[in-house]
Image (cartoon, rainbow, N blue to C red):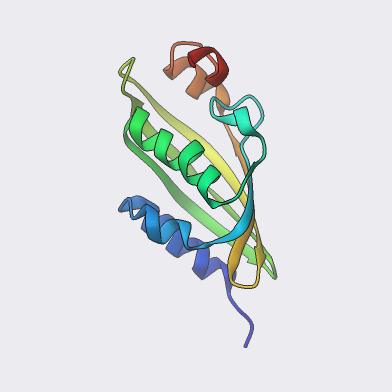
Length: 140
């Protein structure tokens, strides 16, 4: 039976929506590669490799620095080992009170039933404006 990787990605977004980070992380291959969008405020470790690095450099930081941060897919397309999701990031940056409503495109590649690679594209200018025009490296 062929795996419908689109269903895995739907579950990924549902788990992140309820902030079940443990279960979200279990969906990744142990050596997952995450490629943030170019010029993204959290692109300092590009690419991020491995579960601990991904969890602490992306998920933990996003949830600590943003109120109501969400990634909601509007469309999920897939063929074989590749799934593409298009949707919106929303949230408010705690330090400035500035909100975002930015489109994203995520490209996922699988190894078996685990996410092995995740490439993100988004409106990085909205994020940069929300944090006060600073990049991730400048905030440290």
